[in-house]
Image 1: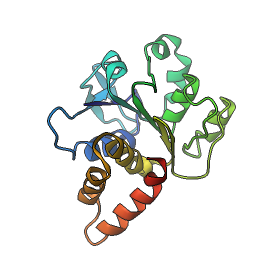
Image 2 (image 1 turned 90 degrees about the vertical axis):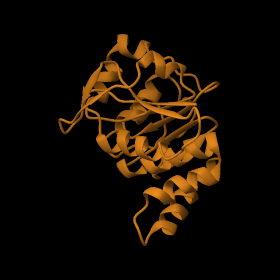
Image 3 (image 1 turned 45 degrees about the horizontal axis):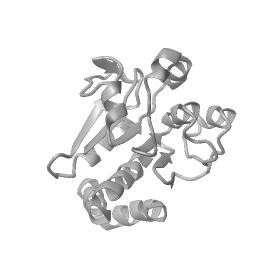
Image 4 (image 1 turned 180 degrees about the horizontal axis):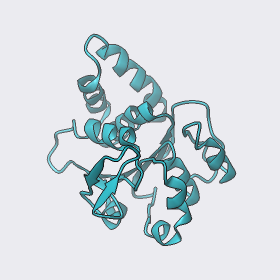
Length: 198
């Protein structure tokens, strides 16, 4: 099981790395989570440089793909050569997008007739792409999910885990990363946001 987190230049660390951390709480044989980028190294919006663990081609073959956000997402969607490499398919993959990553799914035509969630900055661009934006942190239909707000990445991660390994695995992963003294409240909130869409 390979989950690829698409991470572009100018990426938001909270989106890509929180999801990476939560998704990696699943310890099953063959479970692999990787940062997938168009270059060997990418620099975040705050000048953190990370190395890619997978290519965009690898991501297109993954079982699940999470599209992270960043300050240069509009540059990504304006780059036709880059966008043409993103051959994502919800009939064979779980797809999720975080904040401005929703704009990428919209421009790929993967949100046709689906409402979506995104951050407040990206909302007008997603709406301009013809997608209705909801005022909530998470929504999913079929194999496509979107989340809005950096810390909503926990909901995307929980949804991916619940779909791929089951609800108890998702609860366990969220419980592990939740603050001490607030674990049950965090698990309850996460699953209340995700469960209607499983």
